[in-house]
Amino acid sequence: MSSTDGLSAPHHGAIEANFDGLVGPTHNYAGLSSGNLASQKHSSQASNPKEAALQGLAKMKALHDLGLVQGVLAPQERPDIHTLRHLGFSGSDSQVLQKAQQQAPRILAACCSASSMWTANAATVSPSADTADGRVHFTPANLTNKFHRSIEHPVTGRILQATFNNDEHFAHHPALPNVEHFGDEGAANHTRFCHEYGDPGVEFFVFGRYAFDHSQPAPKLFPARHTFEASQAVARLHGLSANAVVFAQQNPDVIDQGVFHNDVIAVGNRNTLFCHQEAFLNPHDVYEQLNQAMQDKFNIIEVPSSLVSVQDAVSSYLFNSQLLTINSKTTLVVPEECRHNPAVWGYLEGLVASKMPVDALKVFDLKQSMSNGGGPACLRLRVVLNSSELAATNENTLMNDALYNRLCAWVEQHYRDRLTEHDLADPALLDESRQALDELTHILKLGSVYPFQRTP
Image (cartoon, rainbow, N blue to C red; front, side):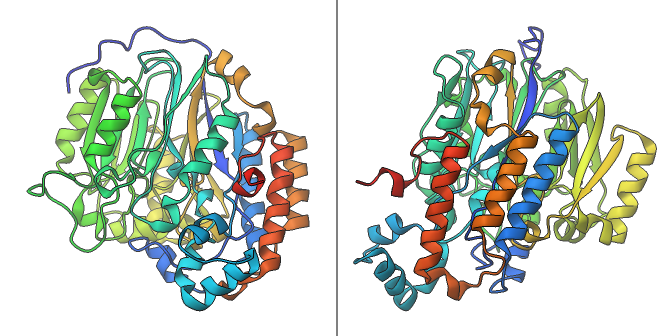
């Protein structure tokens, strides 16, 4: 990829906001995600929705306290009675749940998933500095590879529109066609590089396979969820310059080792890519394209397999971390599991000691999320906003002391501290969830985004 034409016209005053997904009341371990080893490992264990939500909120508050702009994205309505009815379960809501549990318990589990907490999969976002019309563009991910996630995007789109509700500054696209050829996993397979957040940047789309060319390499054991064609389509929809886009294929062999998204094996921020040696197919070609697109002012931290194996990277979620700029310093936010892996922790201590270019580590306890297969990077959607766009964002969704306290009290009031698959058919859980979400839409000023609020 040749160097970009437009890296020289900065939009001053831009910041990168992180919008974390609020864990929903039905957080459970149903083991729905093949290829996600943590999800499979903890299948059928009892979960703690209250603890999960409070852990996520604590992470949001901590990053807010460090001076970052931190937002909150609401969860989905679960159990998803609308989808269960679409699949032929009839009667009252409680009868629908009872029939689904008796006739198709795995479908019921899928319709109760709280996986929208991982908002890295919510959408792909392109900042206004990159787009042809000078607006921030959002495309909700269709997540076609997993049924329990493929039913999220209509509500995700409404939540994003309620959060970024200004046509002058924001453009919202529908999800791509809901077929495997355009399987789109959102920002979990997308990274934006830049020198300053307000500068036109380079958007890095990582895909697992080609949908229309079966002669190309592909994994053999686990699915490649995101296609090249989906990445191309999102780049077109967002009006991105061909000179400011780099496409790269995941290494099929590491997908077969549990690297179901690129954010399990690589993370980037500004002009730095932090990745594993085995992350990409033809990695040196990928690095060369990125260097050229970034005009050679680019840092690549490649972690060698001899120091950290793919297995250690997956089990610790080393790369499912957040790489943040805090007070001009580069900070890596990692899950507690990294500290418990000697190879990973030894590598991280050496990396920080070198100050090249990571200056500090922050460790968070996200055990409830980690046990279901998602670390710090899964929990957040990155949105670059200039000052006008930030002012046009729904202020009620932006973290502050008052919102944190209110949301913690909301969780304490409405969430259970123990949930099993058997509990998913409990009509009381549906009522509790709907009551909680209805109150949440008032707290965040979202309007009627949920099906139960929109049905007469």
